[in-house]
Image (tube, rainbow, N blue to C red; front, side, top):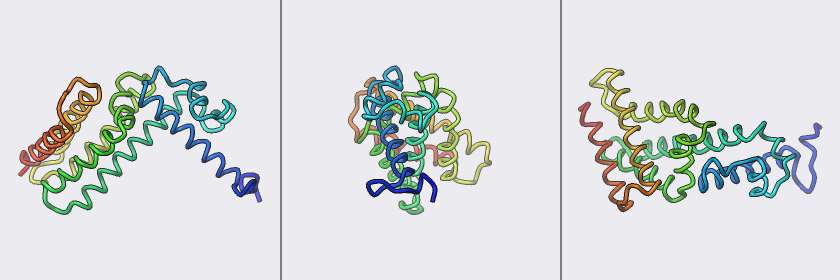
Length: 202
């Protein structure tokens, strides 16, 4: 039996490490998604998570590694939410568009911290500028898969990339307070944009 397998108070060392890592990620999400990257330091994260710095360095090499892990967690969650929504919606383009937009709106507006981490943080935090750009294609690929194959891959890629960029900027404006519309109107407009992209290839 290894040290990580031995139990103490009913949990293994590996379990306790995983729990502490989750606490640190939650603290990073709270700080990054509420006050922005300038609020995220090793000391602030440990204080928020109620853990010592020793436990921080057990999971992360430095502050930037934590920030990237927080971003990756939210990006992966957003991608999976969209995949699940489209799969459950059925074959009709309108149903898929409404399901995907509604799922994304719920994800990033019900907990605005997620939206700020995913969309605003990469604009301001040096640790995320490159990572944010690298993750964009996975969302464009998901959109491209939903477009008609009556046009070639390059056209679908360009349309999907433009659509993801446009939608991202709408949500950035909404989350930053420069776009003052109701949630329902934002959702309806995003659905029309998605259906418009589909119409380009029909």
